[in-house]
Image 1 (cartoon, rainbow, N blue to C red):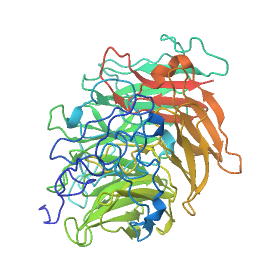
Image 2 (cartoon, helix red, strand yellow):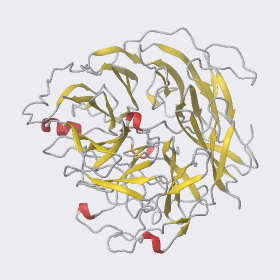
Image 3 (cartoon, rainbow, N blue to C red):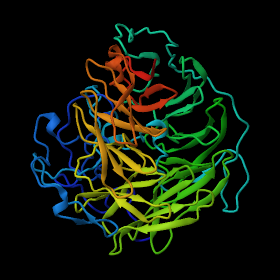
Image 4 (cartoon, one colour):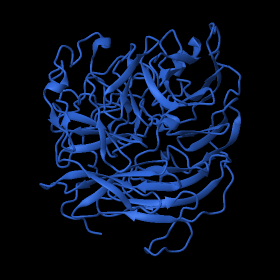
Length: 598
């Protein structure tokens, strides 16, 4: 199909269209922080002519009081004296003053990156590695962003009414053993002596597995799923399954023809996931091949190929998300929904209105959120936030944003909490919504928050954040810190005001993981002489003190803190930590996954 004249240029959604990089403006890269644990390698700024990353995960945080230098907001008035127009016409906080290095800092309160994980050298892939995998803290995140839509070309099956082939579930194949090197879990043994010298009250490393062979340039290892007594992990070209208690191989590994490039970060109700892999090994290969897997058995279900759409609607990269039994597969300017169990096409989401194109999706439970870019390049340019019925794609409600505001992240889908940025004003907004799309509240806390959020260059990555949690009435955000103790602030969704805050019990930062049974579960980063911790904080009442659930052994602190793009989950009294990115360094003895418990 031909491209409408008001369509944005290819590769630009998630960044302002027709706007050159601004080295001295919003999102300008700052000096890197000290090395640390939980997190991912930093990436260099985009080359000239390419869109700059959005502020968030992978952005060097600003020097603050914990880094030994004055922070950009130290000694300055709070943001409430100079309200700025918010995206919905509400007052909003003022942008920050210029930082200590002369350039304006990223938006006040913007998601900050984790410290560098202690592996020297440039980030894997460099500027060419423009796609960044989403980072998920297990069940703490409802689902991942989906960008645009897809058309399937499958290996078999009849034509649908739209004239294209629909994916059809083939006979399930058993797990395929890979011919390449595969990690073997320790199975309760401790060949690296990580448990040696455990102190009183310290938990132990239950098991761990080395990373599989990967290219010297590194490889993605996205996602981690815990189902029943099995932990499943994708890495490079394989999907591995380990027993949660002992690390023994549960099934597989399942091998894919090329490297894995995207996954559904959460599973369906019946334990199905979809893994995307590259069409080939060359530089022109696309992330457009899909494979459904059963997490219980490792059996392969239906498979398909994502076809290109219009001129600027390529399947060069895709994003996947799950809402109930609906799988959303996306490109840059459209979306297509499928039944995750059978692969049957459910509906398309394409251009609507005068010039609105779907740009991103976030899903979870029975909710599916769509963000659209409208009137790009014109006087009426704006974004729209919509909720769709996952079963049929019908619009439940629409919320129009003011010009200049972008929906950058969704901290939660149910309830819906979104983080918005205004690049021109260099300011931000966190808004909570009611079930029918009305503004419930906007965060009004004078604080610099630092959830860990993924890069968003080619993709919006709405749900690329971890280190943030939400329950029915409260948003939990970590304050900024590089290597020292920080706080978690509980913000009421009813009014956007602070309810309470709690300080990290250790000398390292603490981040929300999830909420369960009326309490907040948080993770404290390891330090050089102490293992990480899992703590619980009562969500209700007047006493909000941390209770240690797990204190990992100090002998494993170095390994625990060195995971690239660390992916966390707390399940069944065990902490699972896995890599989101493999370094490809054969001499580093890199781990793919570790499990801690009593």
